[in-house]
Length: 221
Image (cartoon, rainbow, N blue to C red):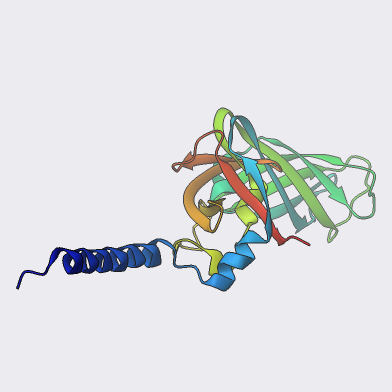
């Protein structure tokens, strides 16, 4: 049956309205409450940049005596650290007994995910069993795409996440960072490499210098 023009227009308008509503529901799955929460958030971001990264690792271990004037300690490495640290590199070691002093040290060997650090002690100041903190500086990249290291630890509110994301938590090289589109947090999976206190090298991912990554999100007062 052919409807008269006024009724045909009304029918078409109704179908269009249903289609628009369906599109809105798919594109904006956030609840009203979540949208209100999002509007009240104070978002802090830091930009992806290009520049040098020098790998820095701080770890702890217990000193053991090797000979009359040398101690050693073993430190555990993750997959990223193991690729960045090599035998022969300089290190520094600190112990609580001498908080103002740092002892020069050297990486003796790297075996799998364990590095052994040698600590010379010509002044006989150290003792076996002392708890020590060791700092290592490994490989360097001069032209890396750098992610702000603090962006790697950010976790958004679960109800404001714009897409599901899943990675193997045992794979230290694959991490999730978050962008913010004004309403929700969008995940980006990246593969990371060298890292220091401020920057982490991105080996693989779609981010570019100038992209803003979320480092914190707090409710505005």
